[in-house]
Image (cartoon, rainbow, N blue to C red; front, side):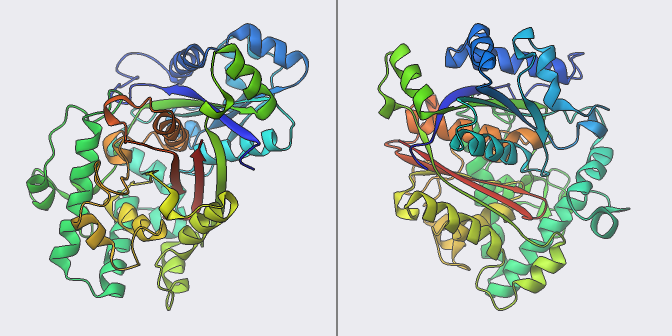
Length: 421
């Protein structure tokens, strides 16, 4: 597989922006990010037209809920509104809650591996600041089993991931203060990393360990069980584009841009598993298993196996920190620590920016922001930056391989990709 699909790069919007306040729609966002991504990768609209004559280019759009947030469906066809070069280009929208961007990537990767297309343009997009936080929270509830887990519940997802924190405490018999301190450290790290990222939503926000630990007051209100605002990812307007290519196209691309093929990152491995949709079913199924989220762990193992790599070979991680509890569980899923020992890796600085296994140097969903359908595509873009040494102030040293975990729902849809040279 590692010789089949190459990552040429892309671009993301500034996740700090509020597009509705600017008087702009999802189409404005789509046009801007596509123009920027093509400029960044050096691909012109004339090239898309050329490839389309031979049916060698396609578009894959990841989006969760434009029907509710912007009253619009059929987003896979809207690149025709960006530029006439997209007339006739195959395009479709992919949805898997917060993993929508990754299932779009998965479809694109599959088509390139099958040699259907030479170029696959993957766009993840979500406009979320069109509604109040309570209405948006209800929309997000449809990523769970709405009738059973979200209907009539204010902010259902903080409560679901608050339950995950409860189960972690109970199963591993942890001291609550130590565990909550570890969650606060995850928050501190992500906010600190985001300050290095010029596209991060929280780059100008204040957050330190003292603030993150001080839960429950007016400045850090409880939102779900033990979790407070500092434990949450952001509501974000944003889009990201990642461009994928076949080996033959990547060879020509490298030559054209004065590069060696070995300079272009490849998708080395992937994993995709679906767990029971309700959190209670997940909890019940995992009784007796050392992993609380066994299907998340299995997804990571699948990707390692396909890439013929293991945790020792991964230099950087981008993970789905929709809440601090989800990142906490991911640490053992990656194999960085044993289950129940994640707090030790956090305390020892293993996952910090300068640690042995840095997680979310971009700032993650907590720091960069979480435009739901765009997050997976943004993670892939950040792996490309890390592997090519182009991440700027948030560049981790000597990155050869990076891994991303993107989840939908309460760790229901699990998607993992490994990218490296």
